Every structure is written in structure tokens, then in C-alpha cells.
Length: 251
Image (cartoon, rainbow, N blue to C red; front, side, top):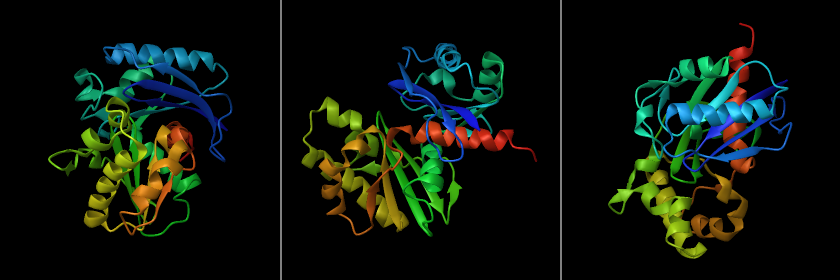
């Protein structure tokens, strides 16, 4: 069974059909820059473009969003247009796309993919996923069960939101070396370790492909195991597709 997964980010919108059984992509992932301004209509236009390019998929679409999402309604909007706040995204996308749309927080979607098919599979206790990109997303699991809509990217570290110090965007904008940036990420992980005492921390986002450059620095600062996401930057759209598949499954 293939379900289309869409991952909305502050800088890009990615999509691909996902084989639900194993989380592999059934076609090459497509990425389109996030429109500016990133209003609901503009973003829906990009998603429609991606969906049309994968015309063979049918059924529901799983869509991630960078903010708190409850029952398909957006409650916060990080790094995208504020018009999304208090917006019924699931109903809106379903109408625009002509098929059911399931909307979930982007880090929660990535966490679901990693918990079921990736680095968190079979891990008991508390597992935390951090996605490092335009901002920092977080997903927390207890014995495999998601505690949705955590926002540890906005946790205070050295007087600033964690994502204002340690997001991948900050590394690029400030041209930070891997050692210095790794120390910043390590401070975030250390703060989380103090608060949650996790059994595993997973680092996701596109930068997880370069984990060897900074994770040794992070690991040297904390006792909790820290590992890269196995699904890397496609975890979000895989998780979105998994959640949409559950929506489509018969009761």
C-alpha cells in the first residue's frame, strides 16, 4: 500500500509516495521551496503540484506542519505565515486536494517513523527525537506511545529559544564550525536529559546525514545515548504517510 506523505518546512515542502509496510519511498522525493509568504493558499498550491506529480497515488494524504496540531487544527505556526494560527488545516487541505488530508506536527510525524521503523524501534522507556532544521522540533515517546505536540525547540538555553542557538539554520547563517555547533546542540540535549532523563535521543533532520561531524561532540557532553535518525530527512513524510494510512484503515 502506498500513501502520499507531505512534509511542510520553513524552507521547503517535500513529498513522495511511501510504501507503508517498510517506510521506503516508492518514487524519488520531490522538494519545492516554501512559498513566501507561506499562506494557506500558497502552501496548498505547492502541495497540489506535488500531488499531481505523483498521480498514481489515491486515498488520503498525510501532511506535516511545523507547529502544534490538534485534530487537524493549527494552534501555533513556527517559521511560517501567522495566518495558520487557529486554522482548520485538515478540512482546508481536504477541500483543496479533493481527498482526505491528515495533518500532524512535523516532529511528531518524524518521531512516529523513527519509533516504528527507525532508530527508536523496539526501544522501551523514554525516547526523544530532535529535528534540526529551520528550527528545532521535538517528539517524545514513552514505551512507544507518543506524547504529542511537545515544543522543546522553544526551551530556554542561555537566555534564548533553543532553536535560536542550535538549529541547522543558525549553523549556516553564522557559519559555525562543526565543533562549535555540536557544543550548542549538546547544550540542548543536556538540558533535555536533565528534564526528562531519556533512555535514547535521536537527532533528525537533513543534517543527520552528517552525524559523524557533530554527534561525537554531543555524545561527549551527555551520558544518554545519542544517535542519528535512520530515516534522516525523509522521516517526516514517512510518518505522515503512516498516520494517514491508519486513517484509511477499516475500523
